[in-house]
Length: 103
Image 1 (cartoon, rainbow, N blue to C red):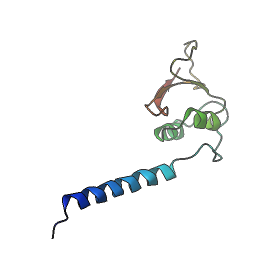
Image 2 (tube, rainbow, N blue to C red):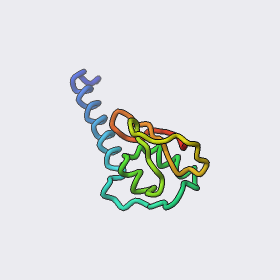
Image 3 (tube, helix red, strand yellow):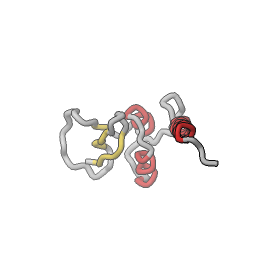
Image 4 (cartoon, helix red, strand yellow):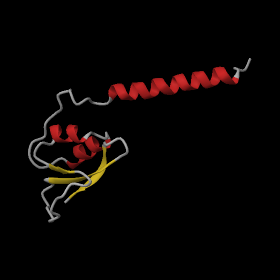
């Protein structure tokens, strides 16, 4: 016997809410003690994986305290650096870092 449309919509909405809440529970919180990576970025693969998790600027600063984070709208010189010590971030609509580049 097929489900009525209203029941199907409620079940779908509930499943979506559980999916979203489950994802939110696995996102690292700023209060958690992150692994600190001092100095310049040496492990680019680990850095890319960290950025793929869409960290907040505060989480970035906690994890990479020696890397200068430049957010959109901030004034910074744009001299070329080859040492991965300054990251120009791109923010998504929620204010999380979704990408960027070293300069």
